[in-house]
Every structure is written in structure tokens, then in C-alpha cells.
Length: 173
Image (cartoon, rainbow, N blue to C red; front, side, top):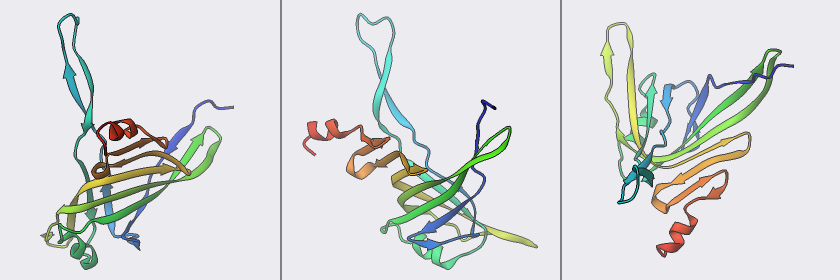
């Protein structure tokens, strides 16, 4: 029996405000969760330490393989948030082959901050890359919530546990 298990995500589909965009995006870069850390140093400490101080801004980039007016209409309005759902199939392998497949779903809400008019080259398909400022992100794998972040509501959940609940209570939110 093999002890090694390999997970692979090799494809995905995007839904925008519930509309299926199968085959329209060439690539999506989901937000990178980056914790801001504040340095603490004091008399009597032999060194310094860093502690959690918040979450850095979240961004999502999508490279579209052609001009899609329904996408650009939403991208053109910086005042209306868009909901994305990115669905993938997480495959698990060992030396005997594929063991399992499970859904991996990312939920993203944000507003577009960049949208192009396109790059044109002779005999080459035009490319369009949009950038979103993200205020909500959630990842669920095989029905299990990995994390959920809502920047505007001060919510940060890990495995379903709200790690900012005490903080919100302390500040009276």
C-alpha cells in the first residue's frame, strides 16, 4: 500500500453572478491571503517578535481569451460588486492511480479595478486581463470550509471557527 498521496488541480470553471463562463477564461489568479504582521520589541526581550495585525489587500486577476461584452459591462462599473464562483475538481492519486475526486470551490466578491480594451497582434487572438479588488473570499473543499474572509464585516473563519469573534466583541462591533 502506497503511503504517498498526491493532490492535483488542473482545470476550473468560472461563474460570474451565477452565469457560467465555461471556456472563456484562460487563467485565473485567486487572491493570495497575506497576513500583516506587526513587529514587537521591548526592553528585556532578547529579540523581537511579530504578531498578527490584519490582512493585506486581496486581489483576483482573470485573463480572458477573447472580448466578452457581458464581462466588460460588469468590469466597467467600479461601484457594483461582482460575485465569482470558481469550481474545480481536486484529484488525489497514489501509486495505484486515482483514488478520489472532490469539489474545490472558491467564492469571491469584489469590484473590478482594471479592465483592458485589449492587445491586438496580427493573426493572434486578443487577450484581456481584468483585476478585481476583493473584499470577500471563501474556500470549500469536499464540503469542508477551509477559510472565509469578509474584510468589510471583520470576519475571518478557519475551519468554520470565527477567529475574530472576540475582537469584534471587544470593539463593540
